[in-house]
Image (cartoon, rainbow, N blue to C red):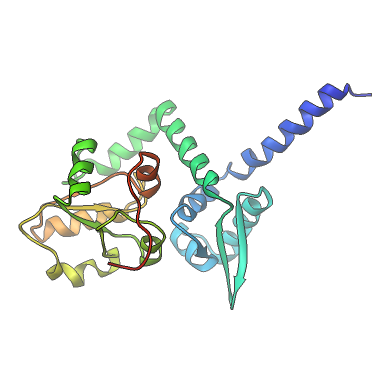
Amino acid sequence: MKNPNRAFKDAIYEQFARVGKAVSSPKRLELLDLLCQGPRTVEVLAKESGLTIANASQHLQVLRAARLVEAEKEGLHVIYRLADQTVCEFFRAMRILAESRLAEVEQIKRRFLEGREGMEPVDREALLKLVREGGVTVLDVRPVEEYKAGHIPGALSLPLKELQLRLSELPRDQEIVAYCRGPYCVLSVQAIEILRAKGFNAIRLEEGIQDLRALGFPIAMGEEA
């Protein structure tokens, strides 16, 4: 007969392992990252993560079984959201751990950004001070739904797909700072390339909303600016 103390320990760690197993897939990690931006339909999550709707649904069911996400039916669509903010904090902590322990993360990022103008490392504190004081024009290039779920106060919602059509709205006498979902989101990378090609002085803010929230930066919610 198993020792009660041993049985207790085994049972507890088995439950902890449920979370580990749920996040052992790269695609499920990406889905969590997307859901950190706000609730989304299965269709949107599938498109953003490069999955079929069927595969996205299967991955989401695994995350749901581990109580990391929740789902509800709204009309013809199923809306997924994180179980709570702790899940996003867990994802961010795991990302930071990987960044600090795995040299490959920095190598992959450096190769991707190499030679792209406006992607050079910047003084984050100085840049955030300018953002806070309104000394730059700030663009949120994520989809509008994500902007509404949380954005930098005063930021203009300008989704990447609309950027080319709305360049006339942007000032040419002020530096433009674009941000998206975080350091591994490519929306702001593409936005900076478009802006610089059109002669704008534009740089990328690497941090996303969850990073800024963790740093104590004020986050606004609500309608598009």
